[in-house]
Image (cartoon, rainbow, N blue to C red; front, side, top):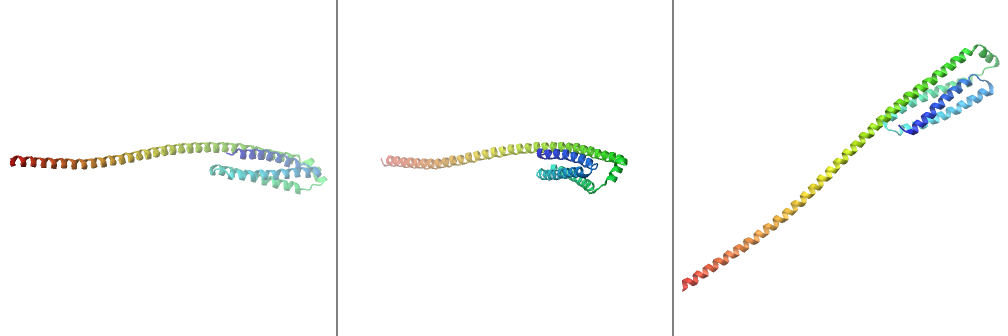
Amino acid sequence: MSETFEGYERKYCELSASLSKKCTSSSLLDGEQKKQKISEVKAGIDEAESLIRKMDIEARSLPPNVKAVLLAKLREYKSDLNNLKSEVKRIASTNLNQAARDELLESGMADAAAVSADQRGRLLMSTERLNKSSDRVRDSRRTMLETEELGVSLLQDLHQQRQSLLHAHGTLHGVDDNISKSKKIMTNISRRMGRNKWIIGSMVAVLVVAIILILYFKLKK
């Protein structure tokens, strides 16, 4: 998997955990402190959205088998971020007066504890999801390495086959050269045989003429 994606993912998980804590603490504040904390959370949400966009771009540039895993993970991150946005809107729209705050302080400690427990549960779920994502990333990386090894093996086989074809082509070229040389030799032999036939024929004719002349002169005497 891309190291760039892992870096963005690590930053996002840390930022998400921090935003969840700030969101929980902001629900217990009032006035300017609450506004400041909500502003910090909103700025963090913008940064988280930026990281998700960067992870999305990086994931879509990877091989299909890895891309599918990472895009599924991004959908979970987007869902968590949308839930956090809804929580921030709910907290920002709540305008508690002093009496309600006093009532909350007196009788709402259990609710605050419940909210904290819920946030802890979300943090645990995020940690568990991160661990599962790391396992999937390791599996994807192992698959990529196996695919790369297979590709290298195929390239080596193709290289060997190419060398064999080149060797066979060179052998055929040598055979063609030998055949051409053999044709030239046979042609020369045929020509020499033809010349020899003419020479032998001429010699036989000369001998016949000589014999006839010898017999003629003997019979004439």
